[in-house]
Structures are given as C-alpha cells and as structure tokens.
Amino acid sequence: MTALGEMTTGIAHDFRNILCVIESGLRLAEDCLDDAEKRGPCLAAAHDGVARGLRMTSRLLAFANRQELAPGPRSLNDLLRDLELFLKYGAGPSIRLVLRLSPNLPTCLIDPPQFNAAILNLVVNARDAMPDGGEIVIDTAPVVGAPPAGRAADHDLFVRVRVEDEGEGMPLEVARRIFDPYFTTKGETGTGLGVPQVCAFMKSVGGYVRIDSRVGEGTAFDLFFPACDQDSPAFPGLWRQLDRWVNEGGAPGDLTPRFRRSA
Image (cartoon, rainbow, N blue to C red; front, side):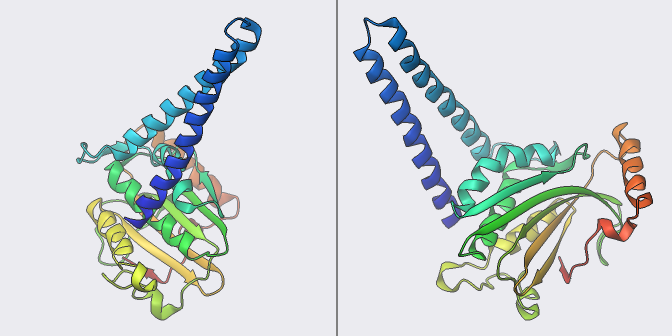
C-alpha cells in the first residue's frame, strides 16, 4: 500500500503539470484570439498536453484493470514496457531504472495485474535498499535448465526476469529468511509480506524465484516463468540463438546464475 501511495503521488504531480500546460496554452490562446500566428503554438501546446494526459490515463486503466483474473499468454517484455512508467514512480527520483529486454522471447501464461504487483514490489524493495540513490536494472532472458529440486519438470525453457539493485545487500542469515511471511528488515514500516507474495505468485504460475544477495554489492531477484509456446515456430530460432551463445564461449550454466536460495 505504501508503494501504491507513493506511485499515486508521483502520477498526481505529473498530471497536475499536464493540466498546467493545457491551462497556460488556453489562456495564452485567449489573449491572441485576433492573432492566428500567435494563437497556433498556444493551442498546439494545449493539444499536446491533452494527448499526454490521454496516454497516461490509458496506462493507468491498463495497470488498474483487475477484471482479467485468468492468466493468458503474454509477452513479458511488453508487460514491462507498459509498466515502466509506474516502476519509475515507485522507484522515486533518486533511482535510475533501466530495462534490458532480450528480443524474441516466448510468451508465458501470466495474469498481468499480479505480474505488475510482483515487479513493483521488488522495485520498491530495491529502492529501499539504496537510501542514497542508485540504479535498478530489470532484464529478461531465455533460460534452459531443470527447475530446482522438488519442482515440477514439465518445462525446460523459462523466461527469466531479473530485478537487480546496487544497494546494501543482505547477510546470509537474512537472505535465508527473506521468503518467510512477516519477516522484515524495515522495522515498523515493513509488513514482511512483499517477497512472500511474489513467491506465492510465482508458484501459482508454475515458476520459481531465486535470490542472490551480497553485503555491500547488492541484491538480485530472478523470477523464472515457464514458457508456454514451446511448439511455436519461433522456438527453433530461439534454440539456435542459445546454441550460438554457448558456441561463442558461454556454457549452459552461464544462462542461469548461481543463487543461494530459491523458492
């Protein structure tokens, strides 16, 4: 709720700026009713403000739409691009948010509102780990390999979404408890439910979570989503791309980073 409140404040601030642009343009146009040459740029500025407001409203409606509760095949890259504006609001002005999205990824069975909430949650956690500012990188990549022990082996191809910060990091004893409900390092401001909710969401889609955190270096959360169209025509090209990465000096293990804890 805190993250949503902060995001709402940022959106309201930008929307107010848009309305100010529209108001200024209309007032100037009123002062230039008899001068078409001066009136044109004023009206153009107002129209531009209206267009920006409409785009923002469309994104807000897409973000808030919770009618579609059943998951469907989605491009995670597209979801992240649509979510980028809201992630920047959630991260705040002192954080630089970077998207690094691998092309031609397979689709995954996803409920967009739940996906949005999970990514926003991780971004806010990353922001809180960098009180003096810094960079959050969200990247996507195809990953080949079996899931951790105890997970279903129905899939061997996943789409990984990584949320990585350069913050304080966590000692091992904290990282081991990060998935425990109600465990928090934020004192009275934390609920201890954010990461467990992300974990529950990943289990609901048949995926899993891995975390790598090192004190003084930062933390990375990896979300592994099972690919849902492994029989599609796009997959042979994807496998060729993975083979090329291996032949150019990588190894299959390089596609999946080493992590201390998975859930």
